[in-house]
Image (cartoon, rainbow, N blue to C red; front, side, top):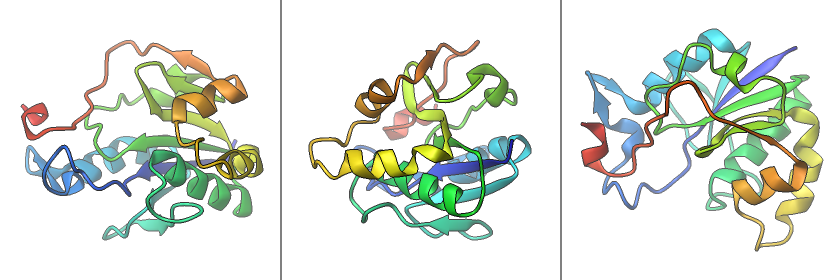
Length: 169
């Protein structure tokens, strides 16, 4: 299986008050922490929705401002065109990914029950997701996951989702 890691990072960080991808945890940005955790689990790594030093980027699909599903759509489109079988996705604001995330998710499509932006998605879903997003009401990752019958997985340890500066503590 050829696996693309995708860090979804196109959000505005409104609740955080500044660019949370650049927030530091133990001297390392949140986005770089996610990249470090994903890199050993995937064949290639991209950032969806923004440029980031040292990493390839893909645009949100069909355009910026579509939320995490737009980042996932951009990553799936890229994965399908580049011959990847699956995308392992994660938000840039989840600093404590386990080293065995892929093993815990099992076969795709699957999502982390409490954080659906963390998931394993077959690249072949790219056209289906694009059709799904043609309806502007379809911007929820949970709704799309339910639509395709993605398994919900409870990880061994819960993940931290950084939405506010105090979440870094």
